[in-house]
Length: 344
Ligand SMILES: NC(=O)c1ccc[n+]([C@@H]2O[C@H](COP(=O)([O-])OP(=O)(O)OC[C@H]3O[C@@H](n4cnc5c(N)ncnc54)[C@H](OP(=O)(O)O)[C@@H]3O)[C@@H](O)[C@H]2O)c1
Image: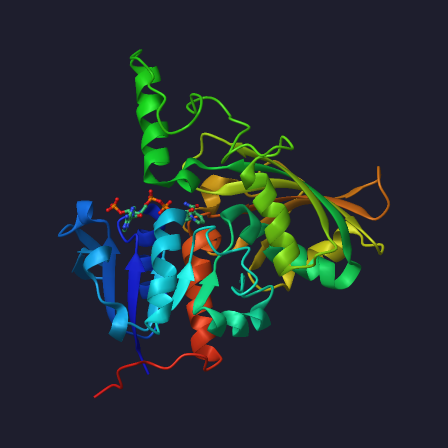
């Protein structure tokens, strides 16, 4: 059994990673179609040792496509995902357009796989925000054992989370600083080279940013609506890999040693935690990896049943492309999707 898969946003950071991961994991494809805007029509992207010519989304007919993985931003998704879903093609969407829709499941396969069955309501499945995905992978196994009451998180998010323009801006500004050229600020609100910016997405009335609100809403939707979470989201001059400093208050007692053992056995998690120089993960080492890495696990004696930890993952993989491909695998494993065209 194999499936015709379309990747919308195939020329972008997440889309390219999507093509790599489909290939690496041997997802059963009969055909892969690369789609983007008309700007990129005719350009080429790699899929394993093959080269795919990019087609324009608005000229493509989805009627014989089985799965469409969207990573072209919220506006494109709002316009196209419902139309594609109505053509009987299951949409796995990376944008925030449908994440909070009650009729659309928001899925991290290690966390809430059973919620996927809801997808038939709209034929759309949402992928969470990159910072939330890695957070819930680490929180879920601890919540199952000791019940989380409250989480305080500060993120250190790489520029690739802002698309290929974000990566270009860090590169261009860094070079400009070194050659004493003018530093232009276009994509971010302030200079990102040799700086950090405590602002991601738009400001809301209460002073939090939309990125911070997303972490709250998505953790509640996927893990437990009773969990209280507060976040500060910060952009840092790192190309790939989001890091998070996380403080967790549990209902029941849990030691650092117990948490380490639980996380060592948990799906998608890798513990790298030695109390010595370099005995922890940094975003540079997480780039290109699938795992959510957990380091610096320690008890916080300032609250009852408190733990602090450092969580790092490749935002383009677990934060986006890998999670989307895992959702497609879950559809296949559970027999929730059949190819439209039977193999000859
Ligand atoms: N980066 C992350 O860490 C991350 C994590 C989770 C979710 N996401 C989400 O994934 C999506 C893509 O992110 P990205 O980082 O890959 O951005 P990106 O590098 O800027 O790529 C954007 C892609 O969207 C395509 N696109 C733009 N407008 C289009 C249109 N009108 N019709 C068809 N295609 C269009 C672009 O094609 P052209 O080349 O033709 O312009 C490009 O392929 C966003 O929704 C983002 O929120 C990103």
